[in-house]
Image (tube, rainbow, N blue to C red; front, side, top):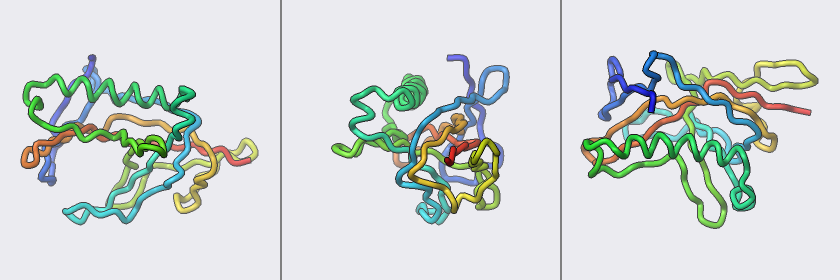
Length: 180
């Protein structure tokens, strides 16, 4: 795989964190189209360190999964590729992977993403396209019933040495939602 990891500068977390970038120091970007976030955006979820989490949970129903929905297959491939890559690291052999792909048994699969933030404010732009016009919209106006397209990238590899767990965080850099 053509990637490298570099330690976070000024990491204030109890977790080890590493940026995931290409060997030429550029971000890895993907565009995923036609997805839903029926569970919306979580803004008041607090971790044990009392940090707000700015997340968007993407949902795929059992029917979409069994019908091989293209967006589901592509997201699953991207996440599995990175998770498989990092699972080969000797340092992580005895650690448990905490995946962003969460199986909800009879309901389908939820895939968890982070939104970009600065000073605990969401900075990932939400752009709604209405009558062929791009309109920057506040996240509170997010329409859970409409599909959207999003640009994502792997944000970091995190390692929790205390609990022997690790995972890859993905961040959404831009969301386009089409309103008709």
